[in-house]
Amino acid sequence: MKAQVAIERDNGEIATFIGFRIQHDSARGPMKGGLRYHPEVDEDEVLALATLMTWKTAVVNIPYGGAKGGISVNTKDLSPGELERVTRKFIDEIHDMIGPDKDIPAPDMGTNAQVMAWIMNQYQKYHGFNPACVTGKPVELHGSEGREEATGRGVAILTKAMLERLKRDVSETTIALQGFGNVGSFASQFLHDMGANIVGVTDATGGVWNSEGLDIPALIQYSRDKGSVAGFAEGKALTNEELLCSKVDVLIPAALGGVLTDENAEHVQAKFIVEAANNPTTPQADEIFQKREIIVLPDILANAGGVTASYFEWVQNRQHFKWELARVRKELDQILQAGLEKVWKIAEDKKVSLRTAAYLLGIGRVGRATVMGGI
Ligand code: NAD
Image (spheres, rainbow, N blue to C red):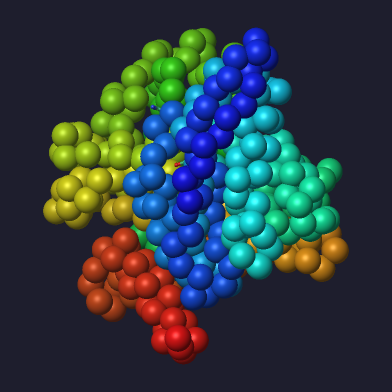
């Protein structure tokens, strides 16, 4: 669905934005997927991301199909009031197609717990109280402990587990990470806690490099205060292109899609790539990485921690029962480790890449559910 989102700006002018909600497949359950606010959002991108959600929920075996939404808007150009009006207006357009048993939005780039709270409230005006209609809500408003950190935590858990399977120790690796928003900042926090040496971080406005290892808690505080990692004193400036091709063990793209291309893939020096972002690698770059024997942990597994914790939030909302953080973390860990185990085994048995193995697992599960459900 394509929607015109018209709002009155604070100065009285009318502004119009284009929004999308695309539902890809519901064979395994209600459709699930984030809502992205970014100037580059378009219909093709939203469809590609909705499709990824179908395979991702199947890879980690949670009872959902796939969907995605987005609005083509730069949130930096909006006041908080304008952001709220854009969100509520979009829900006015799509409220009938979402819902706890139909399609459940969640945060993605440019959206956060506050936006999810507005969605819950606007949905409620049409359909009554039902917090399970959206996940990623504030903990104070029917959100789940551990949801905000979950995607980044999952990236860290899976990076460590993947390295262990290859007889490597996360505490002896160097890491470069692109994107320092929700996913990137939590991933770096947990990897730092595991002893990894994060030497490079970039975001939309610049980056920082320190071969001795960045002080991640200080960088998180700095980026919260300044709105960017650029200018952090304990390191030298770094561009996004330099980061992607830097000499590190592990590269973690955690921002936009399509950043690893046939133009830079030959120059990537990392031995492992963990796709925290959705679709960061173009098919051409993926082929180059395979030829160069660079191991890629694919997005549909690497960043599945977010949708898994969203599933826990939805379960808690439906049971009107709150889990403690320790339970969320334990169940998240189990589901992600089980996903990695299955994918790893398929990759070994069939001698294919982890991405092909993850697709075989996900598409196989969706296919069997479709056939068993019948028409
Ligand atoms: P966010 O909005 O919190 O942060 C995005 C980060 O990317 C920011 O640091 C921003 O500065 C940076 N960025 C934006 N444009 C950039 C550019 N051109 N070059 C370099 N950096 C740039 O978003 P997020 O929620 O952390 O999402 C990041 C990625 O992870 C996206 O691909 C998203 O689809 C994926 N993802 C997010 C979740 C989730 O739970 N939030 C779950 C699964 C996947």
